[in-house]
Length: 446
Image (cartoon, rainbow, N blue to C red):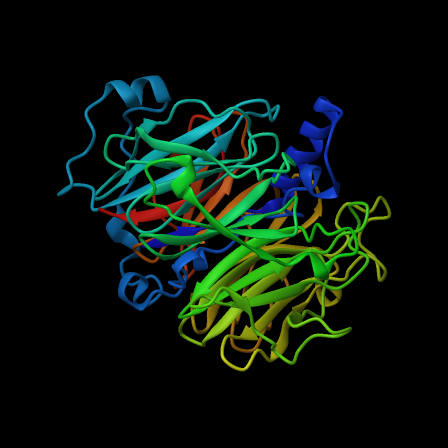
């Protein structure tokens, strides 16, 4: 399984815009989706398998970088892709699924890319009810997380691209939950991080009815005075669930983020010894956590935080309260890998290609991003951004199944993914076109 996230700046902007359009929200959480960037990195720790560092899939950085080939100049629209014959499994051993959205944040769907000797758009889902969505996988299916004003989980068959089901994640109280992520233990047990509440849902991803889907809850409301913890990421590592919480106050990151740790055998919280004020979880030395994935090569959770990105004062000593932290998945110790003060820019997302090569996306304002290489072992970041990725709108980043780094680009004329070889930062092929602007991205082996 391979998973990729997307920069949260636009996920957050999407929610903020939707709030403005709807003029309603049940809590801070319903309108402020993920803080700033999705992607993340490619690991979606949903199952604890990190795509960015998956030894079987990624091997040496760039080792198979040329194997993906170039894009087939075939279908570039969903209508054409759905009408065309899909690449055979022999020709396309992997699928990539991207959540895409319109420029006005008023529409979106999932687009499928077939990855083999060539890469091409090979299908699209039915339109989503909103542009605020997120893609995750258990390694077999695509799961679409319908966020603000949708409050549902949809499972798709990756071959037919048809929905197996769509279940609500709104509780008996009727309060909008704004789900943000889903982490899997096995075929019959998973967890849904519900951003707009203080409860994680325990669910059965193989359920055949809404009643079977909901199994139980885990109460994390103690982490925020208003009871809604803004939980934005969930990662399963072994028999532990890690839940990243932003703990915002009136949409503002005024306190440090936290990670709650849950025993997946008992669904009870573990006392980590890393919290304050009687809290069991891990206190982070930064605010507004956006993304979290597991790096199995180092046994660390990699957490990126944006600080006070939406403060009108911009990047300064008061607003730069984010960066990249490493959390040991065994003893829960925390280390700051990248401090945003040293960059003078907000951290948006991270991807790790190897022990000595990673990439960090930073932003100065919405739609203005920079991609820099860094050393994941030392935390040293290159001073200059990559020449082709400076001052542009980067919407997603992650490591693909053949070792290339995929970078989502918001380009009015040609949205899609550019790829680079992490061995030397050289471009791989041409842009892989998507019909709409790519956001979150997952890779699935067929």
